[in-house]
Amino acid sequence: MRARSMRIGDLAVQKVATIPSGTPLLDCAKEMRSMHVGSLVVVDNDNKPIGMLTDRDITIEVVALEKDIAALVVNDVMAQPVCVAHTGEGVVDALARMRGQGIRRLPVVDEEGKLCGIVTASNIVEEISALLDSIVCSVKSSKTREIAERP
Image 1 (cartoon, helix red, strand yellow):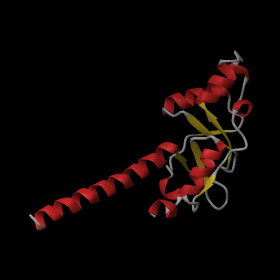
Image 2: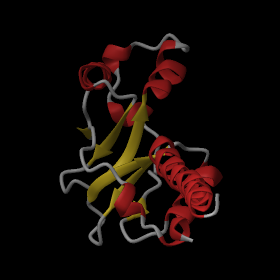
Image 3: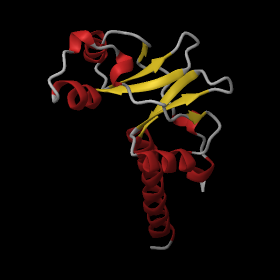
Image 4: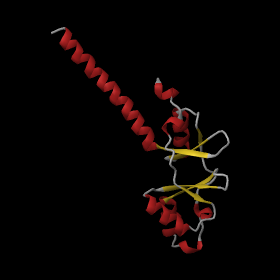
């Protein structure tokens, strides 16, 4: 089955919204808004992921607890350690890790541990949907062919 052998690096989106460690949390929220994303991968100076920050983190950990967002930096709220996938890892294994960790986004790293992409549950659903669509088209095509050849 192709899905079992498909590599996470093949599905990863290479343009990743990142933020440096130590960034004021208000700047993180503004960055999410300007980039139209719901999460940022927090990276160190070597572009290695050290945490994840989601809009939900800001809502649950800051807004709901009425904390002063202006007094916080990303490191105060981000989820850490960050769970990552390696480019050559299989999609099924990465999906199992996402399910086990209860996460929907997985930064993808290269052999040196540097960020090179991100995969989301939506990316995986889109790929599986495309595979299912191919199967449906194949079934329809075979039926159409049979009707044409054997009236």
